[in-house]
Amino acid sequence: MKILHQIGEYLYIMLQAFKRPDKGFVFRRQLLLDLKRIGSDSIGIVAIVSLFLGAIIAIQMAYNIDSPFIPNTIIGFSTRQMMVLEISPTFISMILAGKVGSRIASEIGTMRITEQIDALRVMGVNPANYLILPKITAAVIYFPILIIFSIFLGVVGGWISSIVTGIVPSAEYINGIRDWYDPFTISYAMIKTVVFAFIITSVSAYKGYTVKGGSVEVGQASTDAVVQSSILIIFFDLLLTQLLLT
Image (tube, rainbow, N blue to C red; front, side, top):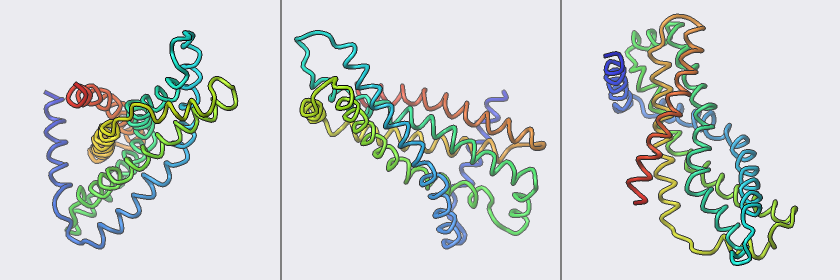
């Protein structure tokens, strides 16, 4: 019964959040602020993780391919496919769930326990709409940009590692990146990214919005937001893969 209550409460809060904003300029101001907090502030960690993951994938592929019948171009091809299909949209989204999700839950949770949300309601402001909708919109807009950036850096990381270690000639790695390209794989990655962006922001906002107690409970809500977002990302990753690639 508890999980049904939480689902119902989550849906109700989302319905309140997706009402038309009372003041467009206030929404735009919050959206620009959240674009920086959610998107721009995450560029650094996305860049570092993607660059090294691409390098690791290329090295591991070269280590496991020891047959003379398999061309070296498969290393570039495999690095590109793994970054596009799974590593960037799913793995990076889980990292963002930890960084962005915990921040959203703690921010809104702190406002809840300090009664700022109640003050907004007294002033006639829809607190769910004011606090949650700009964050969801910012994530849905910015996460695909981060994932495209991640894919690019992952492929570049693999290329750099191939040059530094000499595991495959540069020209063959680049040819592998170009081989058997299917534009739908990018569409698939973007669809997953948008779904994951909504999951991370909405679940984290819900956990913060409904927190009760003090600072300890806010910390617990942040942890729950990351854990639940990660579980839902894995579940919807399987579901979307089944629907879109089979």
